Amino acid sequence: MPHREPGARSASVKDVAAAAGVSLGTVSNVLNRPDRVSPDTREKVQRAMLELGFVRNESARQLRAGSSRTLAYVMLDAANPFFTDVSSGIDAAAEESGLSLVLCNSRNSAERERSHLALLEQQRVQGILVTPVDPDSPTLDEVARRGTPVVVVDRTRSDQSFCSVAVDDVLGGRLAVEHLVDRGHTQVAYVGGPAHLGQVRDRLQGAREAWAAADLPEDALIWIETEALTVAEGREAGARLAGIPARRRPAAAFCANDLVALGLLQHAISSGVRVPEELSIVGYDDIEFAAAAAVPLTSVRQPRQLLGRTAAELVLDEASNPAHPPAGALHPGAGGPVVDAGVAAAPGGASRRRTAPRDSSRATTSRVTDRNPPRLTRSPKTTSTSSSTTSLLPAATTQTSIPAPTLPAPVCAALKRAMTRPLRTSTSSSAILSSSAVSSVSVKPSLMTLGRYSTARLSTTT
Image (cartoon, rainbow, N blue to C red; front, side, top):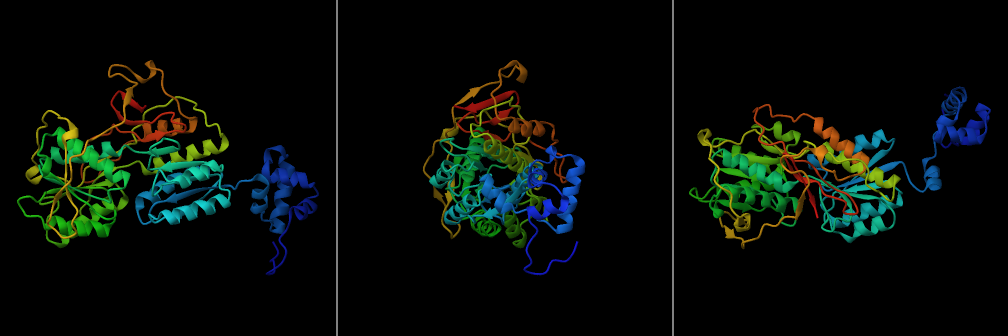
């Protein structure tokens, strides 16, 4: 191919047609509908494109079609490996559909999120996936109202007005604290914040439910609230934990994500605290860094790539079918939160026998709010609430014997894949404490929510 001088005119479709000896319509078909062109003619046109250095004018195609060949994901925090793993799943689904993926980082800023959404609308992306700062933001409604499909990732809206994909964080919180209770811990700190984040609240609710079910003293579960879910905040929380008088200081911590857990681990090691002999730590997300830490972390694993892939398939289905009707059967999977056993262990390896569960609405948590340890303030008693559910699968029945709820076929395919995907165990321990949770998927317009799946039971939010 001859070298093109700077500023030289790019080859056009007319140039390609003339060089190949075909019509403009034939060149257009090769570009857009190659199956309509004979192999010999298609090869002749493609050879002419190569010789002329032809590059398709995507802007012109986009102008005619009214949409681009791209998806977009507005992530909450690009510094958090959880979101880059989610984007990997989105990218895989986009690539399979012949689309490219645009990544935007809101940095936990509502203003940056609005700016990204506005720009993506102008670019006429086929669909937007977003982990929003505020899931109920009216900006999302405005974008959808103007015609751009929107799917919420790792969050859910209170009005269920958008397709969304998330895991059951209440269940994840329960798994983490049940693990610590099983290891014999009777004083635990929940480390995470800020309180306005839904994941932080849900994981705390699950922790409280597990604590209440174990019939342990309410004030023995404390909350060390952080200003963000970062390594730096984890280190600062470690200093506050260390400042609590020894008699009341928990010997175990459940962190709202792995970054906080890594920060806590760093502080413990630098302070000479032995992990897990003197301090057991459980994280959340099971990012690669957690397994690569100096002391491998126990973590509640989330199906990060599956979250992204399922969300992408939902938005593509909505983009190609505005009515977005349900189709196909829904099958439960095994891709939800799972505790990967790493460093969390009770001193001496003791285990605690479970006692009868009690009303979780009575569970309260001491909450560390002062930035100067070791002051503790007791939060007011809160009532643990949950969505009303309809049991679709009685304990003695099978999936095929009950009329199943329905979802778009791409979602069903993603969940079927989850069923056959083996659960990864931690290299530091062969124990996996639970594998019964499944991703929560809600589909517009309030078709159903899949969540809190346990053996032979599937619940829908009503």
